[in-house]
Length: 123
Image (cartoon, rainbow, N blue to C red; front, top):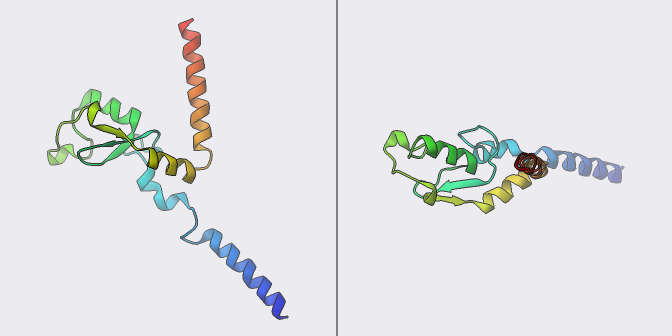
């Protein structure tokens, strides 16, 4: 009887671990790994060196074509920025790929498809 209770307790503990706050649940980190410009998971996270706000590299570069301020700082009179103020955040990129299953593979496939389409256009 004691062994059966111990086994049941171990099974319920394992089930609880899978749903506990300590589990790798991407929802816990959603705001930290989401680009505030496109609202998607950050692809090639890039940080503005003045204010440390981070966006997808392509999103912040597109934004800089229209405006010279960080999107989150411009209302508070932030400093003007340009491409030289942008730093790639490799650590955050690694964390995002670990937290979001399949994201890295999808990005690799999209990049390969993009390159293939543009190779065909160039020819």
